[in-house]
Amino acid sequence: MHLDQKVSLKTLHTFGMEVEARYFVEAKTLQEVLTLLNYRHMIHMPILFIGRGSNLLFTRDFPGIVIRINSKGISVREEAGEVFVTAEAGEDWDPFVQYCVDRGWAGLENLSLIPGTVGAAPIQNIGAYGVEVKDVIDSVQVAEISSGKQKRLTNAECRFGYRDSIFKQALRDKVIILNVTFRLVPQDPSVLRLGYGNLEGELSQAGVVSPGIADVREAVCNIRRRKLPDPAVISNAGSFFKNPVVTEDQATALLERYPAMPFYPRATGQDRSQKLTGGSSLPGFSDGTTPRGPVKIPAAWLIEQCGWKGFREVDAGVHVTQPLVLVNYGNATGSQILGLASRIVDSVREKFGISLETEVNVIG
Ligand code: EPU
Image (cartoon, rainbow, N blue to C red; front, side):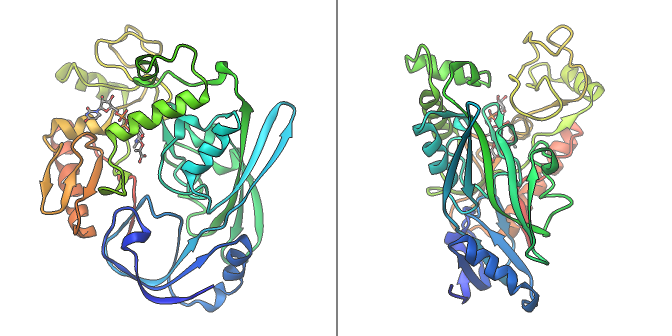
């Protein structure tokens, strides 16, 4: 392992800010990760563990040591018709999804093309196109940073929520994720989740009559490539904000003022449920136009309504096709992105009375 000084983080995170780490080290094996933890008590400076840095916003140079977890390895156990796949934290997410899809194991295909690593996936419970990673996580192996002691957390112990988990709450900065075990099933059309947005439409447009998991993966990749900026081309960290959840009363009042406002039928946040617009009629609502219980509203819509879609100021911008994503066109600073984010939050609050919450991890 190499400990380097004054390392540029520009290519080590997807927002592409020109910031520096005072020290940087990469752990390429599980053993190297554990060795670093053994030396933890000798490191008297802030530590930041990163994967591919796809959910980070740096607002200044990092004054401590950045440890990149890059451990690799996949092992498989089959049991009672299910496949338990354990992947090391440093495995890249999308190639891992491809690996499972290639072998006909269903469960991860809707989460195709999400940037990042396997180890980062449980932290914010990544989700897309009707699936959250918690739906297929069996357990997560962690090491306590202070002692190096290892523990396996069950799915329930991870306390997953919408873009949330124990790793962002009680265990924040206390453990690192070493590997994740997924519980997948051999391909079976009945397990496919096609209900989100236009996934079914995308498949039928491609002429797919009875889709398999590879078809779903391809459809998801196509939608993502059309709508979301590729961080390799335009720097970004995916959704900058969470989709807000509002009370039934708030939603009803908003729908009176904005009848075309889209909303999700369920509060718990799994964007598994099909989206509704004011005129839709789907289960979960009394008459298709009146929400029952708290509901989730797409932040993208709120931001677009406030006129921000495609906005650009110098190199900080709001993406042209998905306004939930803030982008760095080249030399934006973290502070410029944060400044833009706070103007967006203010205008959404003023117009709709809703406070958007940041989804990316701001380091500063
Ligand atoms: N919308 C607009 N204007 C736009 C784009 C979208 O009004 O320009 C509205 C539409 O009503 C649309 C709705 O927003 O139906 C939802 O859009 P989309 O399907 O793109 O999803 P999202 O709710 O904006 C969430 C996740 C994404 C994930 C997509 C697809 C969060 C914070 N974001 O976005 O995750 O890819 O669903 O499942 O929940 C990420 O977390 O980094 C991320 C990209």
